[in-house]
Image 1 (cartoon, rainbow over the protein chains, first blue to last red):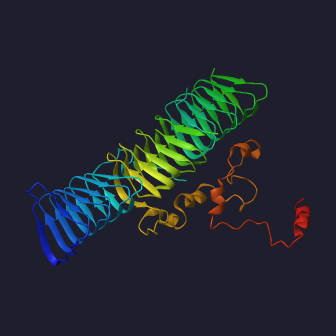
Image 2: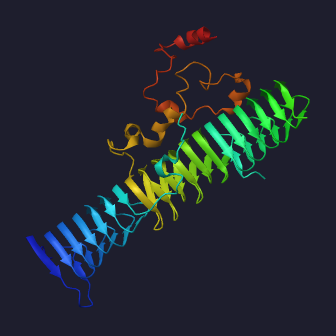
Image 3: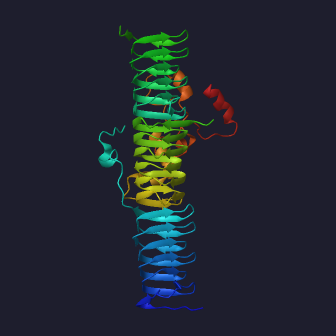
Length: 137
Length: 104
Length: 193
């Protein structure tokens, strides 16, 4: 069981090969993880994760870090803010705490979430600026 | 059939305006403006001025009723307020206290 | 008895909507919604109000906080600006949200959100005291404001939900029931009559 600890260093994962990058279940990373392609985290990562592709935090994976990725799927534990250009999917069983930014965010029933969602969209005009004469009694 | 039903368990305190038929089975306090028909069913309580098209009342209304059409107070209705309508029917058993103004 | 209320597309309500029933909103509601059943905001629905219910399902537009005692589901087409709190929350892919989302039964006190004061007690139930003044606490008339003779209305006006009684922390305690000693019940009954 590899217990690799990298302290405050940058580890790059190339995904030019077909096998996707995986931080296995027995691995613990402390530092910045960045990569060109997709990344699956089954172990523990603490620090920062910047990935050009899709990030998947598997069940059992535990990430304490801000995340920057093209897409995110979480089945494990995540603590940190998320900035994703594409879609964020939080699967049942996941536990997430942090603010999420993405073009679309989905939350499966059974997932735990404590954080704010920030999607780009506008409300119908009746609701903008209080809609005028809202009579509150 | 009306597409708006204010069911028996509901209380609305405020203003209701409807472009369509509205059936009240619950409680409305405030104001009710309808463009189409209004039905206040038995058991309903409306404490509000009501304006609308044809109105049928079987419940309790406290407030002025203004209709562009006709108003029907059915047996069991209890209305306290003025009624303005083109036609009015007060059934035997309906209770009514107020003025009636029929645009003749 | 299924009590279904539908606020249709051509209807606009400005004020407070409360009650023990299920509510479907296809029209426009502004003010406040506090229901003990399921609140469904349909695709055409537009709600500028906080919504409290047992289950809240949204497919339309809502500007306000959503609080449920059971579950909240945002389905495709939903557009929500406001905080969302319930033991179980589901957000579909096509639903858009801007606001704080918190699953679980004890929301931590959110000092920044408008519903902070409500979140101290269980979220949806805490809204109920705003809905109906604690019934037992105040004098006999079921609804405080009503000038009209109570005869007809008392049948209709639902006895404010039992939840309201339990969670009215600020209402004066019910005026009855002093400590009873054994055998005092009989005396008390006589006294009541």
